[in-house]
Length: 229
Image (cartoon, rainbow, N blue to C red; front, side):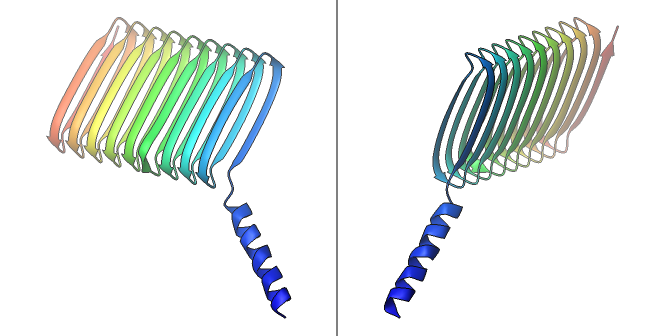
């Protein structure tokens, strides 16, 4: 009887350990692609799919229940995901040549970052410190740049850029701040800086060579900017 109990206990322990293990899946098709995955902790999940030439994916997960999903197709694209603490979610999808996406989720939980880039030499950087943050970035074209920094909790950012050499910078500190940046055209630049609670900024620029700067401190401020030519 004791042997049976010990055997059952061993099976249960093994099952628990297996259930809490980390999972990594890498699929690569093409030439000279590289994926490097480092996982420490419990029940982290990483998926990498690369198709083409000289694509590079870097994943570093330390914590529990984090998940990272990377898809790259083309040549010379770079995806870099760094996750700490727990239940953070990162998605990178890149199609084209020389695109780069960086997502860093540090010291918090249940943050979501999604980056979608298509074209040539687009660059996206997302940094989230805190919890319940959301950052969504979409860039289509050539040489577009997005930088999102969120610190606090329940902040949200959306960036959409289509065209050539558009630049978006978003910094949000505090809680329940939200921003939306949309740029169509060439050489447009948007700056949004919010510090406080429940602020909202919306910027729309259509055409070429527009610049917008929004700074908001405090509670419940709202800004709407629309420029076109």
